[in-house]
Image (cartoon, rainbow, N blue to C red):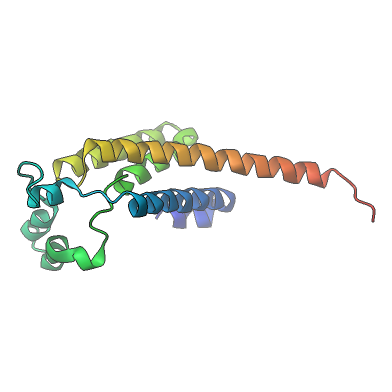
Amino acid sequence: MIAAWLWRRARPRFLEFRAMVVTLSFAAFLTYALVPAAPPWMASDQGEIGPVTRTVGDVWGTLGIEPAQSIWQGGGAFSNQVAALPSLHAAFPVLFLCFFWSSGRLPRVICLVYALAMSLTLVYTGEHYVADILLGWLYAGATYLAVTWVRRLLAERRREGAGVLRVT
């Protein structure tokens, strides 16, 4: 929804947002490939740690949405089960927070509440460890800074190139 809104209302900001989302996703997927990490519920199922209840499927079942419940309970075919580190579910809200920080107090507060609520929920529901969350936040912050820096650098080079008259 954010991307669609930016696409319609602020195309240059959309392009910046798109670059950040793609960069963050690529960095996380590279980490998943290099460092597969089991989430708490899986480590519990394998007897590596104490009991952890994966509650997301139960919530869908309580709400009467059985197809969603079945995906969470047996959805290994639909997702990478060992892609817990970093948590993209925690990283994206922090990326939104960084991206909209200068947009005013209301967007900043909404994004901050969303980031904190998502992070707490991910730990409470047994989907991620606190370290997964913190690393996701770090990836989001680093992505924001890196993309912002690269875009500024490219803009400066374009301005410098436009000011030079080339004679061939």
